[in-house]
Structure formats: structure tokens, C-alpha cells
Image (cartoon, rainbow, N blue to C red; front, side, top):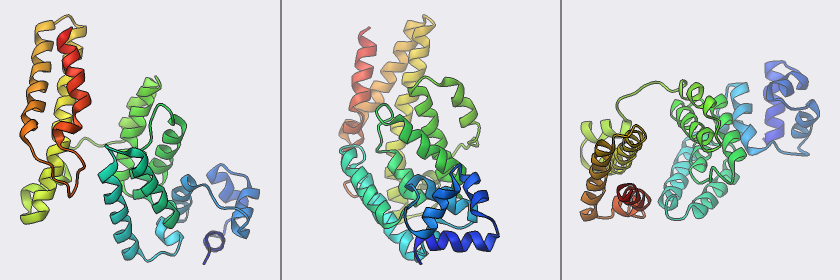
Length: 269
């Protein structure tokens, strides 16, 4: 069944008019009519909202085999992740190709956000984040979109929007990766530990930098320097680490080059 036919079928099952459905999406009923007749297709960012309205997954909306889709989406996301830091354009191409095969897939859209530059593509990032927050049934994707949207608001100076967006995220003091690494054994534990290691290192350096900058602002230069030096030592410690190329394209040390340069400038002040 084609997408337009599926939308029409689901709408009739729900016993609502094109006008009611269009109002929910903020569209004209003429646009909905064109979808249903196959003359046009919904924008990719609209797919999650359409699926949410009908209470189905995006895969169900397209009549995909859910198990096979999940497997292929995972492969696409894993491939894109390898290039996320070193070549975000290539990572975006991989995910765009995936979205052509699986339009509106929440995981692909979530991964796509990591490849988009907030400064040059602000509207696209904001619209995609809002669409995922409103429509996804996966809490992990919803909360990640909230985080990215908040970062985008900071980037464009809309600081008043940050806290209301972050308030949608529950406070959690552990990660899934930490639990997998701690509670499982073998390759699953090792992979989780390597991924969490990279995340933890980056976050620790970021928090030390934030704390140091705030201490500088308060005129507590000595305390600020202590935070920057700790951050520098953390990063230097990873110089001896090795590349696990099954999941990464660079070491933690190489990946933190921008942070190292920033810390050097802060210590030179």
C-alpha cells in the first residue's frame, strides 16, 4: 500500500475528515487531499507527527517489516556514526539515504540531528527537534531532541526557551551504557564500556571547562586555573589510549583536539 492510501485508510478508520486531520498537523486540507491521491508526499519531518496521530509507528505507516527494518536502520546508524565526527557530510549522506528507504524513521532522524550544523541550519534543526519531541514514542529520542533543541536555543540566543525545554527531561544519574558495561560480560560489556568511556571523558572535560569559566567570571582565578589544569590532565591521560575502529574513527584524545586548544588558550590568559 502506498503512503497516501495508508493515510487515507487510517483516517477513515479513525472516522475523521481531512479538515480535522489537517488542523492537527497545521496544514490545509488540500495538502492532505494531495497526499491521499498520491500527487504529493508529506515532508519527511511530518512523518513522525502523522504516525503519532494515528497511533502507529513510522514503519507501520509505510507497511515495513518491523524486525527487518530495525535491523537495517541499526546498520545505517552504525555506519553513519563512524563518520559523525570526522566527516559529518558523509554521515548525513548515509542517513539521508536511509531516510529514502525508511521515510520518517525516528532513529534515523535523531541521528541526522548530529550531522546538522546549528549555526548554518538553525531552522532545520529546530523544526526536526520539535517534530521528534511532539511525535516520537521513544523517550530516549524525545529527550535527546530536547537536549539538542536547548543547545540550539543557546546558539541563537533564545536562552528563555532553554529551561522549559530541559524541564521535559527527567533527571537520571546513570546511563544504559554504564549498566550494560557493569552488569553484562564479554563483548557487550566491552563495547558499552568503550562507548561510555568516550562520552564520560568528553563530558568531564566540558564540565571542568564550564566550572573554570564561571570561576574566572567571579574573579577566582586560582580556582579557575585548577579546573583547567585538571581538564588538561584528563585529556593528556588519553594520549596513550588506542583506537577501537569497530566503533570510532578517531581516539578519544584526537577527538578532543578542539577542547585541548580551548584549555590551552584559557590557561594562557
